[in-house]
Image (cartoon, rainbow, N blue to C red; front, side):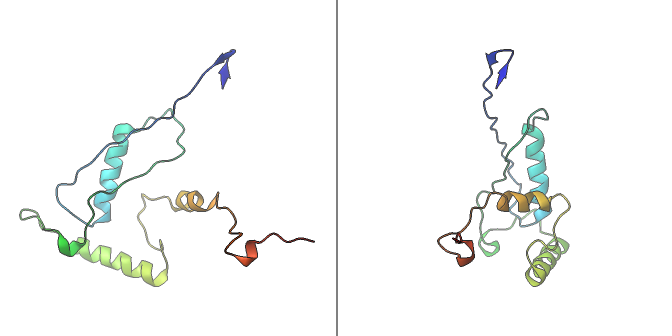
Length: 129
């Protein structure tokens, strides 16, 4: 880019914020709240973003972690997560999701720049006339 004849080099913005949960959980609203909290710390409103992500660290099976002695999981939370999983398995991925997730953006991100599968799909082979 040039501005008044001067070359202006814009360095990409890169940042992160780590949010550590008090206790291990598998409740999606807790993850969404943590992600929004981290985003509020690093978001710059004057920048145009191309990509953002959330990393979950130290994942484990629910059977293998020690639950908190002081904070028990709520049966309603477990029931909600099981219901969402059941509906999504029965009717397809992302049939039911949270309002904080923009599905259109997720779909575009994954499909927009997908290249043809020339070596694995007959329908993607170029046709010669």
